[in-house]
Length: 208
Image (cartoon, rainbow, N blue to C red; front, side, top):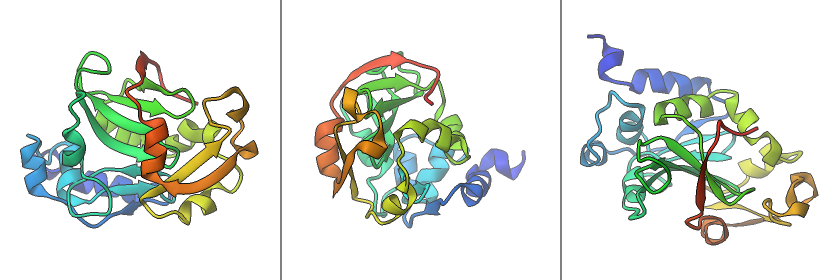
């Protein structure tokens, strides 16, 4: 058996190193990984054991890892009684979660709570497939319609506990062009209050 089949971290760290403006955050917990019943053969297990999370695209996307970092841990998110396990979120209040039964069929695939539709959308991806996509240029395609001119500099200036409140809201008829929206730098708790309701779910083949 090869090392990569026993430990996904070397492969995952290679993806991170090649990702657009990605940063590994300090932290990580083997105890968290074990508590969730994961091994380091999985990307999620390796991410939890070795990192406190990852930021991608100047911090636009925040992928959750283990305890001890500046982001919530996956274990904290796993306590969600709704049957979801949150594994990441973005600066607009979009949330990525693994389906434990409340979003679809409970197969652990990734759903996205989209701030421009206020719906949980099935991405038809496993966590490892989702992570691979977000650590490549696929992230630009996924978020293309939600970004504005100069977004990278704006996002890079944000702390990890802050995001953007958009007005008119992205989900409204007048809010479909983010270049025409007013943006406020606000605590993520404020974005969460507006954008993280239970929502409804639907299956899709992705975004863009």
